[in-house]
Length: 79
Image 1: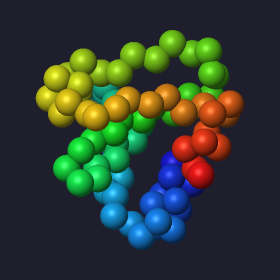
Image 2: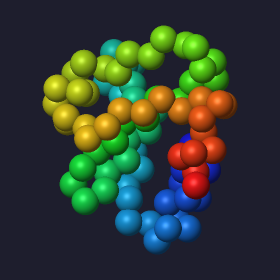
Image 3: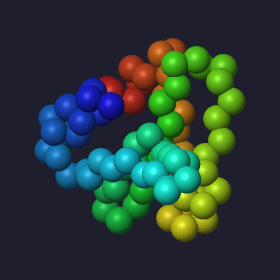
Image 4: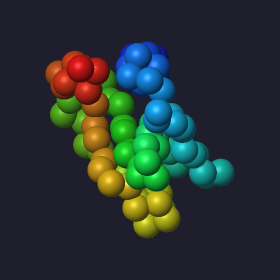
C-alpha cells in the first residue's frame, strides 16, 4: 500500500487512494480513483489465493478494472 501511495505522489498525485469496507466487514483493500474512474485492488500474500471481489462494491461503483496484487506480480504495478 505504501508503495502505491509513493508511486502516486511521484507521478504527480492525480489519483485518490481509498479503502472500502461495509459495516459487515466486507472490504476492498485499495480503491484508486482517477478521472472519475475506479480501479479496485485486492492485495494477497499467496498468489494462488482465491479472490472474489465484493458484489455490492462491483454493482454500486462499477470499477473500470479489478486487480489482484501479490508478491509475484507487484513490481509491474509499481513501474
